[in-house]
Image (cartoon, rainbow, N blue to C red; front, side):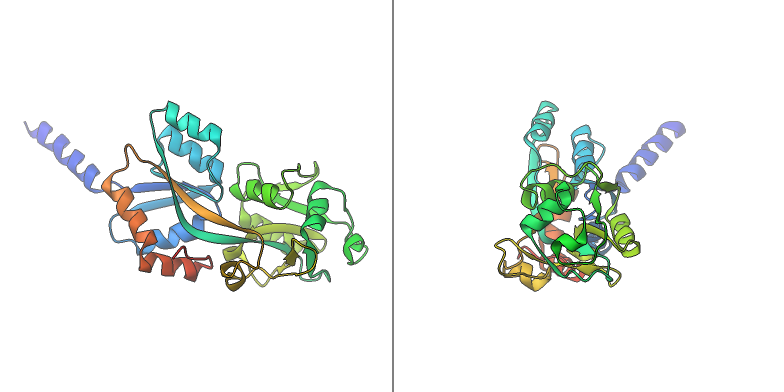
Length: 266
């Protein structure tokens, strides 16, 4: 009898201490961490790894919410549905992708076409775009990253990255690499911008060059803007999952979005 009571008590403790697990996009990571810290409805653990990693974990059932900086692919939706789950998408914020270079680089603006040519390998020296005679070192996120996918779609128009691109496992690694390499170029979410790198103005029409700022993302003058997303299983989502997402979308949660450096949905 005593043993049964102990087992039941342990089970009750386990249930009481149940913590939600959020996994995925490194772009969304700092936002989810701040939201989790402010949320009073229970414990929430947050880890990165990339949008694809988070969505795979959601499909496998090893996390409650997948954080993503790109839309779920058709194949991923089918896998989730085949596993008896129903994907539910929620836009929690918006982000501008900043193209960054080393502060010593004299180039301060590029067109979308120039960026395409740099990241696909047609332009290999900064002198070809008005800079110094210096080799361009291209840094990118790895293929599991939602930022990698969105940048390829929006900026490269779905053309392939150059074969010699240096793939980084996390956004912080791109920041550090560009900071330490004079000829470097890369791209990061707006909230990751630091004084150690220089953000370029970008033009999609070749005429108006706009800097990546929250204000320019809000007024839609900066061209590289995408939604930041949460995905969960609508069939099995418990009250805690919905309560947490409601908090993120609340006035307090959206204030945190602004504090982190992203654009609120409301």
